[in-house]
Image 1: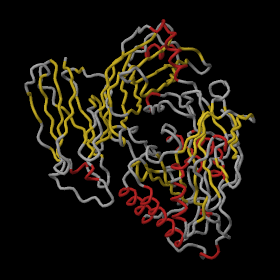
Image 2 (image 1 turned 120 degrees about the horizontal axis):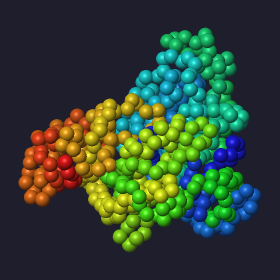
Image 3 (image 1 turned 135 degrees about the horizontal axis):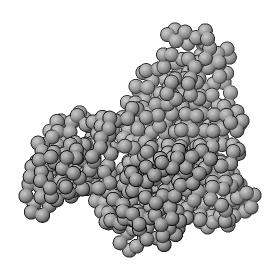
Image 4 (image 1 turned 180 degrees about the vertical axis):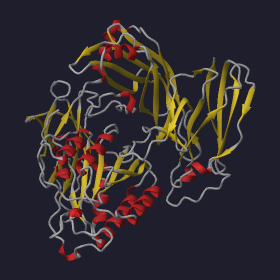
Length: 623
């Protein structure tokens, strides 16, 4: 990894989405970098022009791209399509590191509400976060495409202004770095809008600001910052004379008004703004820059995995200016991981892998497929790294269309550290649970998972995958995820979860997806699913009638179809959050009274406002 804040990172065209692994799959976290899924680099460029001049219609001749000082041959130029691109925006409130006077507070609140109102759309996911004194950051609203919960979270944040303004346990820069890393798995360019904070100019490579710049660029996150003017005689919230419950210790007219500057914004391709009456228009324009960027593609010279390269983009036409990141880093390609697995034992499977593939919708014609796999890593190769024993598990998942082309793919290397040989042997004798995810459109596929853990140690499994079409105007349901393990839902996270990537949580309980559909009669078996009711979203959702959304499930013998039992019809009223069309549901399945055999679980949901009823089913066995 290059340790200089001068290196910024461009978008690398992605063939598939990199997986988000659950915490248990990594025992030694590494910084995320952009994955070079193909040998073509994509650079997102924001083009601006003098008033009255259109920026449309630019061709490859208008751009010059230099990599490490050498001019590159441009393969193609595209304009971003606002109708098809999925966008991610995080609004981050910094209410601690800089004072905001009441007038500015009001201006900022109205600007943010106006921003949400003007840019919220089905394919634009927005999350709200806030700096806290002890935790570093707190998620106020996870990613959602619904405006209502976002506006409510903004109002709650400003209504509950921080009362104690003491020294922070975590720096703003390190908190923002964590946020950017959490967004790294989302496709394309992302936006982080920092509301508040001083415009730091500290370029020390070890400073929190520099760490945030590096993390944001590695994750392809463009930062915009509303910079709060400094105060003549107060050093932020850390002034020892400040009384938490008294009036602000300075009059509004003692602000030092200077042009806004933010190193974080400047070196990630964003912009800095002052708190001003026109702020709402400035923020909306910034949020929409994702819709109007040009994308320049070129084939880079050969380089090693993990190498970083400087970029410089210029325009060859007068009256125009461009903003772009000035570098990118590569990581090992899918083909490298797949090739390594193929060389192990000639690519022949030597251990068994069980796998389940539940899916849940995350947007129009888009589903997140959860990969839950389990295997015994027998034969894993460990080496002494000076601190103990170290091994790697290489994993590649590929979804093939009926014509054999690739619809989705991910590659991963899981690091495993053990203190001694005894611990290593115990690891190889214990089933390993692995989770990941990838995105596909509704359709019919064949999914193949390949795992390599060492010489002559390869596991392979292949199974059909059918993702049902998404119903935008009526009730929809995700697939069914079977589980034998539940946990208390985690506390409020310090980074937002990308849609389709967080844990499966319903009614304050987390459901861990099982890697098999074969269970012991003594097992505690659960299922999890998600309902999607468009009647619950919209700008002004109405309180739900308990009779509106209901569900029930039945268990029948797989071969004869004989029904063995059904649940009561259950209202989902308590699980509904107004403004959010997603209703998660999970419950225990009473299998202890069933004899050994093969069964089918069928779940049926109905919403009178969104007919017809929708059903999903899954087969399972009891031993």
